Image 1 (tube, helix red, strand yellow):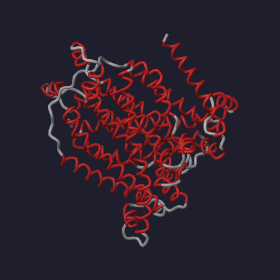
Image 2 (cartoon, rainbow, N blue to C red; image 1 turned 135 degrees about the horizontal axis):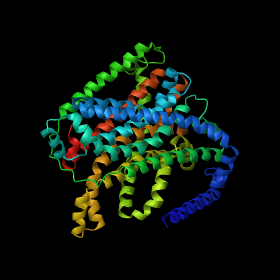
Image 3 (spheres, rainbow, N blue to C red; image 1 turned 60 degrees about the vertical axis):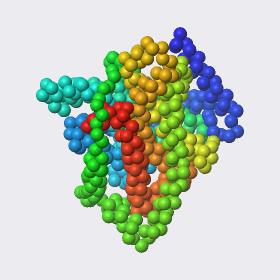
Length: 512
């Protein structure tokens, strides 16, 4: 019965899509399913070759990025003193805007698939690392006490407790990472690749070939949705018993350790930046060192002009960044809660939510800007779409972590569904919500810079694209540093609120 119902829902959605395409035919914004299918059938070989190129790079980046995330999380658990440094380093690398690192990687790595794979890996490792770290801590304190009573250490904790507790969180991270890997590979193809869906996107956008552009978008979305569904199916097959109540004593917050970790991470980043350029023997013309950027911003003859240009561009970006971030986070959490209250809506809304994020932003950005304009509406919408999906997936997972025993107790006392949501599920969702909020900071920055790069031409994204095109590498590297610092500051502000709130509602997350 559910199969027939889903089939009818799919047919209704396709019919509505086709009707909308016919109604807006004069606007040249939407291609209907019939047009897309006809174009895809005529150009199946072209799409297949492009999909093999992009899919192979995305898969390689997906594997490398997620393996790196798992390794970093394991080291952070085994060596807790390094946990803060590892998190800070991972954050800074993830905050590097892909629209700027793409051209730099192309210059450093040359032709080939290297930049595409590297950008796919950079796009996914942090989205897996943050949920995984939360999952590795999501276990009752009594379990760790049992390990310690037996005289065993952190390796035994990791093997027998933390790994098992982290599996649902790992699945969530992998589901979020699947579309991100595809996006990273396509952005890498924008920097000078010879083949791939990103190359086709550029070609069809310039030619205003609407059916072709939508065919690429639908193909990319379909592959991402398939990967999302397969990961979810595997997670459900390997799911254990319902979550237990996590009891943990409150732990004192150690602010000094966070400051020390930040300072150490900053020193390591600067040293690694300088050393990598020196060891590789890269030309200072395009591979700027820390002192080069500092000079461009402070004591170079044109430093005041550089600072003015950067401040003006960042001001334009911030106007769109903050509303889009808040809207995407609120919509993601709100929809997850709505589907818990009315689960029957999930059959319709969940596939739409996945499809909305699965279509790469590099494809949707020009279309949404054409529909909503180059002003605030189009840019804020795209930022909200980028933030919405990881927030929705993470909050859905968090709501499912509500302890079964406590829910049973509420049901015995005839508590309503909304009372269970407000008093049990939402508190259980808080670690996932804050993880999503932290992941969404760089995601929002990526979204707004991609939109500015591809569609509006303004803000810090437009400035980075212009700087790369005219080989103004002082400005490009200065913009990268500025965007990274602002992303890190936003992440730090969310993390500070997270520590304060989770120390009350989820103190196990404060455990090193």
